[in-house]
Length: 330
Image 1 (cartoon, helix red, strand yellow):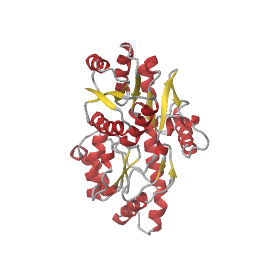
Image 2: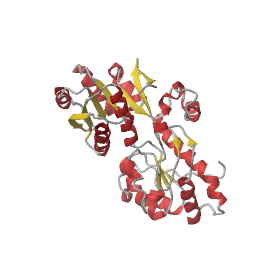
Image 3: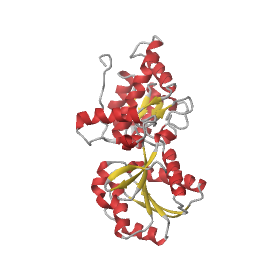
Image 4: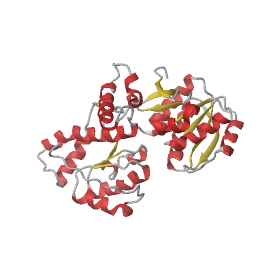
């Protein structure tokens, strides 16, 4: 730790490198690895920054497009959150096991919702599930009554809400208020205690895919992620208080674990930190990280996969009595 320095750069969620020139200069002049950003637009904008500076970047945003395909630019970029397609596959599996045949969809009217609609359409089709109604809403909307009435009118067996953070509670509450009788699913963007706080009892009964971290203590001891996930929980709650664990913070923790895992291999090359040669060595080392159990899954990076997660990075959970409950059968 004594040999590692940190440079913190707050870009205020800037969506283009031009708005974040200060971060760009830092990348070029001062650092060997970039961590962040947490948002899709910010991360995708920084792909160009990382490639130009030839400095490895580890994003903590979910979009697969940040790292796919691994071309001349994206060869410098890695990420820690699960790909949406991986989570959509878990949802489709759970829906099929619950005999869902028709699905309604309501998602953000932005890249998050559009991305989820794309992967869910593919995952649902593979399981013989028909999407019968598609609606969208803004993150800042205060009502989705019109969209919900259209969804209910289509009479789907289940409805997926593709939102993130507390705005994902709005359709959930409206569906409950309208006495929708089918199953309600959410994405892993809703795997946040603030969502439960805002949603209250209306969240009871909803299902979503999540990283194992969300229910780490409930996992069987045989789960390869349990030990590393609990290590993060212990460290986070020691600093922030009991029950404060934030799963999104786990993605940044995992980025740090990737750096720690890659450092010995990069140093072994003899390259000196702070040089282009060391940055290249770190990129190569990150690409060769194998069997690294972190808080959200097990990383196996490769020249064609800079996300590195498989099915061990996802579980299905249900909200019961305002708590996240692991569903081992789904």
